[in-house]
Image 1 (spheres, rainbow, N blue to C red):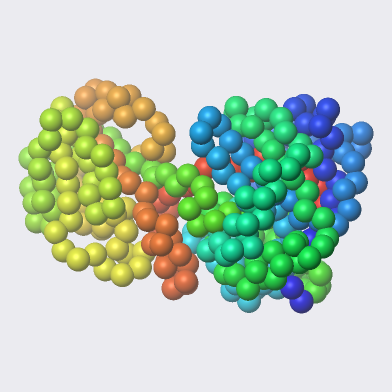
Image 2 (cartoon, one colour):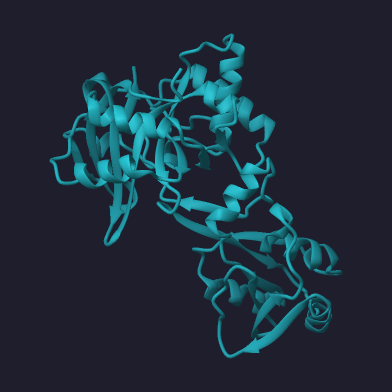
Length: 351
């Protein structure tokens, strides 16, 4: 059985798109519970038949484009779809319950792969044709969709994708829930889940910073760092990069670089080294907050000035580090990285 397949769908009508399509977090809570009990209005959708879809999200010059397809659950069970995050059992159970008790539009799983020539050619060529949908969607992202009907071109793309390995960018819990649903149903051969497949560098990869709430003794912290890191005072906020971390403490910025060769796998990620070599050893400080890198650094440093805390700014890991961790069957530490943008919910309904 193919790991990647066309699927029969209902696609939102252009005149309904702006009032039906939502940002993913607006339709599903992190627990997986449908907060709004979203009802599907039949009038909002039209049957599209068996196809694949090219799906683009854009804002200004930033463009993120992938192929929406049906991924065989058997391919997930066989390890051809691999993740890099741990999953939380109660959240998986909540998603299983959610999927069986609501008619809310499904949230697409976001996957990455090493794109081949058919994927690249299809993406380039389809954008020269009229889309079936093109509208201003949630959070200011332009949502554009093209339909890829059955035929030799689509068949070649499916064959190429069917030979690829996929890496989960967003949706680890949804994948785990679908596997559990598949198991409970007796492992039906035709079971699948909808995903949007991007090239490995096709999404924006961001990090989470760490803020240690006060009070932090600057001398103790700098002394702790000196054992394993080169610590260099700098005039302003340094730009974090893999292997180098920014530090703000006591009103000053530092560039902090690990001196040893990092271990292989997840243990060698900056966030893991920071945790094991610094945060786990820092005595007398308050709780550690994980903060998305999009948060204002000015605000974070202001908080440090108020409570005498410390801020560590991190770069996201390189994309190859993610695939290496997944290939090794390891998981990254919680809140290591996140991908943007997330696909909107409500464009596709699988028949």
